[in-house]
Length: 390
Image (cartoon, rainbow, N blue to C red; front, side, top):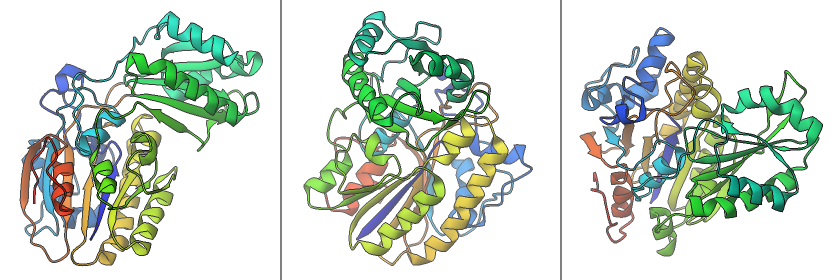
């Protein structure tokens, strides 16, 4: 058996019941994106049942994506129970974990990080630090990129997520040195329970700095085995696409293709499906979040959704009877919402099995229902939490 899990990074479907605790009441990534562009054209996702989910989630309808009487996929929504709205927390819960308490989030105002952490980082890397505040990645390059080029000091910044981000221009700092500094930062950040250390290499000149595809994430180690590790421990291979290997700290991964954008991730997903005989293929499609959600670009977000829908139109007929496709997300990132951060939202759930009648899967409490369902599909012992939807 082959199962494909596609995580549409940040494609939320309406504010979660606790969204107000995060300042996100009223966020609704899909509905607001559709409204901003005069409706979405997603015929494949519509046929799977995407338009049937808002009624389950209690969220606004998605303009252009209507409910259908006989969806091809079972459909539902999932509510996150872990504390946080970041990539790691969402992905780990999808894989069976619960983060309570969540990762440490740092002050938006400088200095964001503790002095002891920064002082030891400077001592061990041999470079000073500028920034040390919360910022959008593009904004901080505009503010500090030239100062970094002139001085060689690291640009260090955080966000509303639990992240220690390290930016460096490749003409000033070799990529290997940037990665080595991130490994040092990862070690220093562990006692503070920081979710991710992120390498942010960039190029270009002042006014036109550009981040490269050589980003790399260094994650906190999972606190217990994920469903990925449980699968590989039972001899079932796991194939990772995109930043999945970094998100799960390279644990429970048989083979990986570390793609950096949606089209490459889609092609890699299809190649894995064609070339392997069994196991789980887990893919993160990053562009929604990285390129359009954080940059508050609903038109770009809509275009990425429509491009992914076209990919699914070609991919769906390839899925053999007995195999399984699950489509979901890890959090929201409403491109019409104030600020530049993730939004605390419910996520869609579509479960496609060729020839199997669709069911209403309801509103699930805990992303980890997905992990429990994968465990059931592959005849693993039950996981510590979650209810299988099979």
